[in-house]
Amino acid sequence: MPQIFKRPTSLKDVQTHFCSGCHHGTIHRLVAEAMDEFGVQGRAIGIASVGCSVFLYSYFDIDVVEAPHGRAPAVATGVKRARPGSFVFTYQGDGDLAAIGTSEIIHAANRGEDITVIFVNNTTYGMTGGQMAPTTMVGQRTSTSPYGRMKEKDGAPLRMAELLAQLEGVSFSARVAVNSPRNLMDAKKQIKTAFRYQVEGKGFSFIEALSACPTNWGMKPLQANERVGTELCDYFRLGVYKNIMEL
Amino acid sequence: MPRILIEETRCKGCGLCTIACPRNLIILSERINNQGYTPAQFANDEKCSGCALCAEMCPDVAIEVYR
Image (cartoon, rainbow over all chains, first blue to last red; front, side, top):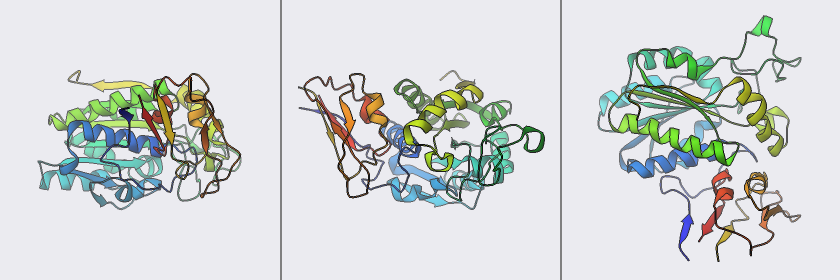
């Protein structure tokens, strides 16, 4: 009987450190599948960020450069300019991209660098202990907002996919989720489109993937998965915000 | 007949496959695996259509599907 579903070749056959129910593993697999489909594994250079995403180099069977906190788009810029034939993507969390690295992501996007950015938004700093991030939902309790995020004091959650879509240099910007088979299939499609932009040399592409963080949300895996589909999808609307070439 | 193969040592018992299966053929077992989780197990392999939605949802890529 033929095997119709197996591990992508770009993804190493190793155990991940992710918590039970964390969506990082799923997003890793989708990225690996897309690399396999475009046949770019041999020339792919991933830029790992700081956070739970840092172990990218242990999980993907590709070359990886580890960037300082938030600086992945700047490192990716250098890598892509030095080796224009390579396939360069960054994989960053929300504490990395939307807080510490806001400047780097905005300027790399505005310059229209020929890279792909995979942004995993789980509304918290996962690895460092569940602190409040710019993407934390109003009212969400974290280790640095024990009474819940207050809009008056902390502002409202940042919507990065919409924000970056406004920039001239951005070719593709979309927000996806992997909490249900339906959303996951759409996520797969959008990640492939983002990669196609780079494979064809058509500019900067950005994917925001909503993710559960059961440990720091203080929830069971299924509860956290449910929260992505309800509370998060309600504020962070899924969809394609920019697609200049209609690829 | 289509079937799935769950790699129990990789499973973290999150249960996402149990809600993905349109026919509810997967349950979490009561056994504890090497990581300390209760792994998913195939409850009824006769009705599996090999749709692979469980494997798609699995964050640990612990499910293989044959059809």
